[in-house]
Amino acid sequence: MKYLVSKSDKTLKGSIVLPGSKSIANRALIIHALSYSPYSIENLSDSDDVRVMSQVFNSNTNHFDIGHAGTAMRFLTAFLSQIVGEWTITGSDRMKQRPIGILVDALNKLGARIEYLENDGFPPLKIYGSHLKGCVLELDGSVSSQYISALLMIAPTIEDGLTLRLKNKITSRSYIEMTLKLMEQFGVQHVWKGNEIRISEQKYKALPFSVEADWSGASYWYQMAVLAENVDVELIGLTTESLQGDAMIAQWFEQLGIQTTATEKGSRLTKNGQSLPKYLQLNFIENPDVAQTFAVLCVMKQIPFHFTGLETLKIKETNRIAALQDELAKFGVQITETAHGELKWDGTFPLEKQAVPEIETYHDHRMAMAFAPACQSYGPVAILDPMVVTKSYPAFWEDLKKVGFVVEKVM
Ligand SMILES: O=C(O)C1=C[C@@H](OP(=O)(O)O)[C@@H](O)[C@H](O)C1
Ligand SMILES: C=C(OP(=O)(O)O)C(=O)O
Picture 1 (cartoon, protein in one colour):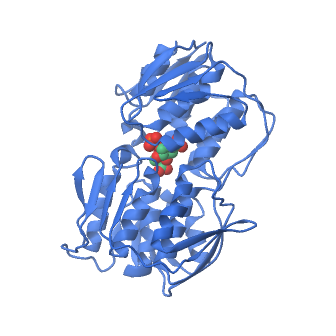
Picture 2 (cartoon, helix red, strand yellow):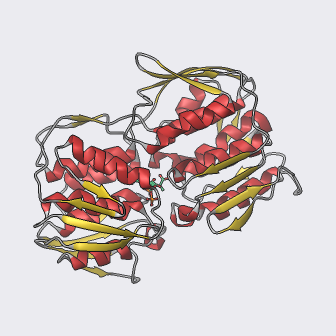
Picture 3 (tube, protein in one colour):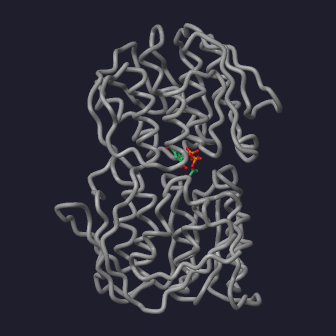
């Protein structure tokens, strides 16, 4: 199934209730479980990634399938390691190709016993959970910050706490900061000096909690705002004061002509009158999830770019470097991987353009959401397997219709 997406006018006006952040929700669910919290968590989104995580805490089985959810796979592996019992955890075919060896080695050093059920270093896993004892762990910080967040969240509950010594260039550091800030809100302190994070044995406080609106999901609205001419959109629940590193995009989009103003209910996007840059250089090391948004936007606005910090994109829901190259080629452009973690576009259109590009989404919600707005400047685009958006933003297509996009189902 595919959706043919189009928009006939240049206006973007309306009020959109953004989903809650899946990153914050899945951390809050783990911390709530660790604090035996009697409170419910407000504003949990009904996205796949949050649903699979919630289900684990409301089930009485010891076998879990978390689908495509990286956070659930990594956070639960650590969580289950310190619950006495035998557990198996698996996921989608793609999840079975996303590495987890660094986390498994670390947990095994703390006293867990985790075995690989298919391929070494990858899910599915058999976890023999037990009493864990902390130590100083050296960990490669360059592959995924989710391993680090997973260990940090269980650190205060294990005997003697934990010291993580991070090696190599730390990726997605803003997500480690999100974890530590959230832990602080629940009463757990840390010391982060240089490349070492120390968490002593402590107790989480059980507290009521409400999840912030999702800034990564907001990025598509900023993108649509740049591609429109007449803009007045309120994003309900979105605040620039945020635990999310992706809140940074409010500043990045200023240079692309979008002003963010706080309202009583969230944030309002309007044009700030600034003309678009002739060239864009951005580093996504802290914000990998918005790279696709900016790549598609720059091509639509004919802004040549040089993007760095994309090292982790090949091990996400799909190989996002290859996916961007293949799908942007359908708009006539060739983007080049000039080095590991770098993409460049020279602003030219050397390839043949497809009249109505058919965008493969490769089980990646962000491919669908980043390419749909392309129709605002290119004309109709078809998005294949469009329901991939349910991973983080189930109401995405309904929200597009609210502001005048036409979304037609084609079999
Ligand atoms: O901790 C988190 O909530 C996340 C961390 C990032 O992953 P990596 O640390 O693997 O880059 C990000 O891409 C992912 O969507 C969510
Ligand atoms: C990479 C992502 O998710 P995860 O790693 O949690 O599956 C994402 O949402 O872009």
